[in-house]
Image (cartoon, rainbow, N blue to C red; front, side):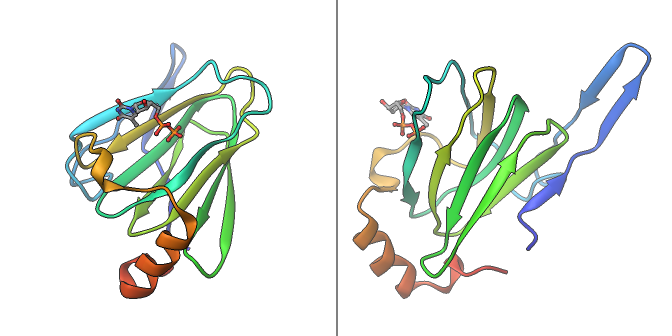
Length: 138
Ligand code: TYD
């Protein structure tokens, strides 16, 4: 699976730096950035898919489990490194679980926030993913 991308990082005796460039490190133009932090104990988030959105997810601090479901199978990614990111292109159901207290999960997105783009019902997700081959694992 090609979903996890190692990020170019520069480390020296001052510390570390990671750089991400649109249409280079990641294959889309970034229109929106958001991050999730201060998550409460034992909460899970997500539970939706998107009709038309590319995302790149980086756990810049701490760790969490990011579940991607293509309608046929689920893969759980334990995101725990600021030096890698999870690329999501196509129609996938996503869930986030097991956030560490210090977790900061940053998401780069290809589109502005649009409530209409969300699929929040799992059966609707399955119906949608069956209509498109974009949602298949590469
Ligand atoms: P929500 O979709 O519930 O987050 P998650 O994907 O983690 O389950 O979003 C929480 C709130 O933030 C909700 O009121 C919508 C708002 N929001 C924005 O305004 N812009 C955004 O880019 C995102 C992702 C959410």
